[in-house]
Structures are given as structure tokens and as C-alpha cells.
Length: 255
Ligand SMILES: Nc1ncnc2c1ncn2[C@@H]1O[C@H](COP(=O)(O)OP(=O)(O)OP(=O)(O)O)[C@@H](O)[C@H]1O
Ligand SMILES: [Mg+2]
Image (cartoon, rainbow, N blue to C red; front, side, top):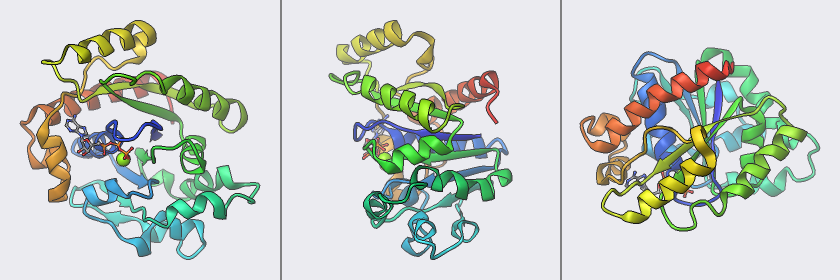
């Protein structure tokens, strides 16, 4: 199953969610690929595989076959395709290509049978990189940071998802919304949670991701938090979320 993690708001926990969910699933023997579609290449760095010569951008510019860009991570069962800064240029380099929204989907088709789960990390924009990721995916997962204005941008994102569904990918399903950086000492967090659950109901995952410093430290060690410190509250939350993720994707029956 191919799943995009998207939110055009920056710093809401997209990359942290991709990295830790992918690792949690790989650790229960699922075959997992992470494709970094963000020119900030944070998930490539988090897995310590950043390599501009093997970037997905090289595939878009026909320099390297997608099969040859796949790198092993330090985690068994988990491979990664790196991003690089130049990927930002793809937005305008491909602007005249009529097929631009389907390029990623077509490339992923070549390799998708080797994996049970393919996670796509996206940049904080709703441009070609995110739209073509949504076009290639069976499902989309939205991390939402528990802060003021968190829900503001969400209607625009949902509208974009609906547009992709109508025009590019009729099978796209909303896997769910994950509330991130939940701070139980901050009443704003519980307020945002209440609002999100009232409005989006069961679309919101049962478990929230707490604000946890280990989650933010782990990338500097080139390791996902759940490998760096399995016991921390952030890792434990992502383990619980991975279980819920599996339940949801089974329910949806996405391939
Ligand atoms: N639950 C958390 N607790 C504490 N820090 C977190 C948590 N989740 C993410 N962070 C930190 O917050 C910052 C933003 O998180 P992350 O990079 O995952 O967001 P993003 O949505 O991918 O950002 P961008 O839009 O720039 O790609 C990072 O420094 C990350 O380590
Ligand atoms: Mg990111």
C-alpha cells in the first residue's frame, strides 16, 4: 500500500511520523520503502541515507533508474529513496509536462510489488511534489500539530485531496488525522484535540503523539526515535499508532 503523509503547514510532524511509523512496521517484518519527496530531505537524513546522486530528483530528470536509487537503511526491511535540494526545481522543470502529476506514480509502479508499505514524505506545500505523491497513493495521512490555527489550513488540504480524487486519483482515501506534539500540561492541546475530534470524529487517530524531546533529538543521531530510545513516550506513541494504522489500512482494504 502506498501512503502519503501530507500537510502544507510546516513543522507539524510529517517527517517524524513517516520515519517512526515506517520503522515500527519494518520492525514487525513488513517490507517498507520510504520515498522522500521533500527538497528539505529531512527523512533521508533521519535514516542517515541522504545522497543527492541517488535522489528521486535524478529519476525525474532521467539520470538514474528508480530501482537504482533505493538505499538500505540501518533497519532491516526498510529501504529509502533520498531527496535533495534540487527536487524543488522539479516543480517548474516539469511544469510543461502534461503527464507531470503521474510521473511519480509510473515510477513507483516499477518497484511497488517489492513492498508492503510505501510511505511518501512531502514538503509543506500543495504543489506538484505533494499532488503527484497523492496521485500515486492509495491513502493519505495528515499529522496536525496541537496548536492554535492548527485546523485553519486543514480545510484547504482536504479540498486539495478532494480535487486530486476527482481529477487524478479516484481511489485516494483519507487514512486519518494524527494529532502531534500534544502537551498535556497545556490546555490548548486538549482544546485543539476536542475541536478536532468533534469536527473530524473517528477520522482522528485514537492515540496522540505527545510532545517529547527524544523525538526531536533522534534525527541528529541518524536514527528513528523508536530505535534510538524505544521506551520514550514518543516512541511508545508511534508503536501504538502503527497498530492503529494497520487496523485502518486493513479496514480500507487498500492495496
Ligand atoms: N511529538 C514531538 N515532540 C517534540 N518534537 C517533535 C515532535 N514531532 C516532531 N518534533 C520536532 O518538530 C520539528 C518538526 O517536525 P517534523 O520535521 O517531523 O515536521 P514536518 O511536518 O515534517 O516539517 P516540514 O514541514 O518542515 O517538513 C522537528 O524538529 C521535529 O524533530
Ligand atoms: Mg518534513
